[in-house]
Image (cartoon, rainbow, N blue to C red; front, side):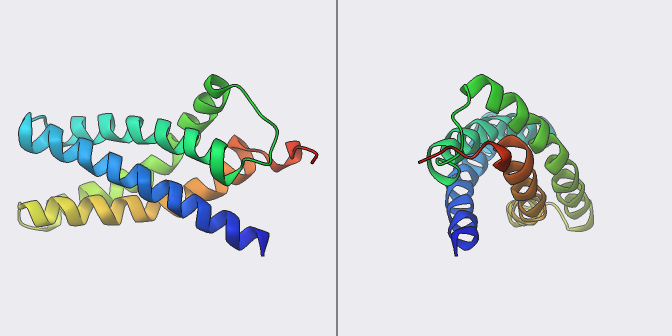
Length: 136
């Protein structure tokens, strides 16, 4: 039951980060006309900070407290590993579907979805290592 609760909390934090991620991406590409790959990287790095902070305060709050900078470094490593399949799917869809706002959002959503599973595993086992569960 606790594992299900943790996964739901992870998805909730990820949902907030996703809104931040896609908002920054859309602002950069649609308002500031930033190249879509540059915008994707910038938005992704900001979202990593949101997920790291949210997961430390909410999802994995019972685990040993670690300074944010240390967690963020580990979270960036985990996110970069998760980012590879994320961007591969994103880029593949961008090049397979005729250019449009719909194609861009579809690519963004599907790429992010692919990265979620790997990101959860890495967050659970590496970033917020369960071997350091705090005592009540």
